[in-house]
Amino acid sequence: MTTLEDLNENAEAHVALELAKCCVSATWTAKMAMTRPYTSSADLITKAASVWYSQCNAEDYLEAFKGHPKIGDIDSLKDKYALTKDWAGKEQAKITDAPLETLRYLAKANSEYEAKFGYIFIVSASGKSAEEMLAIVQKRLSNSAKEEMGVAMNEQHKITVIRLTKLIEEVAADKWLKSQITTHALDTVKGIPASGMMVSLSAITNKGKKLMSVGSTNLDGRVFDLLPPGRNLEKGEYEIVFDTAAYQTRQGYSSFYPKAAITFLVSDEGHYHIPLLLSPYGYTTYKGS
Image 1 (spheres, rainbow, N blue to C red):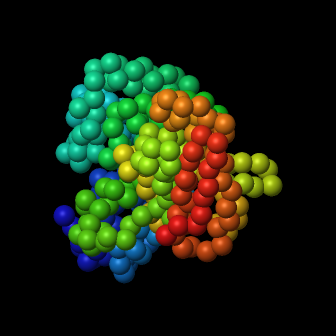
Image 2: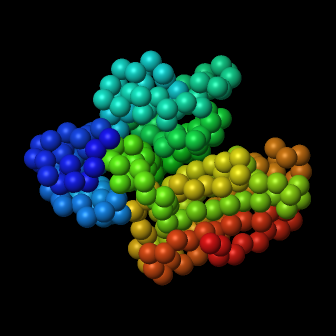
């Protein structure tokens, strides 16, 4: 591992090469090297997001995507990202436990995704099972090209932050790195976390809704990475949509509300936790912590 002091004291070219282990966009690495000094892990993460979202364009995003293996393709994993193959292998570790049939469906969905959008399926795979990633790619296949680029660039930056925690000591020690928006879904009929439920986050603007992120609740019913750390939303109106019908069908009971759409306001850079308490004929929410 390296330190912030190492990054601050070395030449720009060396720093850019180090940061390329986290994201291969030449624009991002070069501009990041120019934002030094990094005064803390929080400063580094904030600058990483600022450069990615305000100083990079679609060409830079596509370049970054090329630095990743296809999800589920372990051979590609070893070949396409040699600089960080150990990191990437651990990021996709849960895939190797999946049934062969699931991997086949995942490979097929990846091929369909690449044919539709022109680049490979990008998702922050850490902690996600192959079944979760299959559900996510199938959901994202319905996006428009513009919507999907916005989602994919968010996923790319989530991966970048994860790799920054593996590269830099101070970031690895920072326990407060988290998405500004999180959620937790609870099935109040069975008294269990509502796992495997698709969740999407959108911004509501005067031009309509702008999709930002798609996720799936984990075994605890949580989605903790709707946004990358350091990516703070502008003040305004946002919406989280839960695909309640698909979840409740799997649980064996009908759903009166096929979707639970929760609109909320972001007024500052604080953390926003938006839980869902779900039953067949109703749902409730509140501002959590």
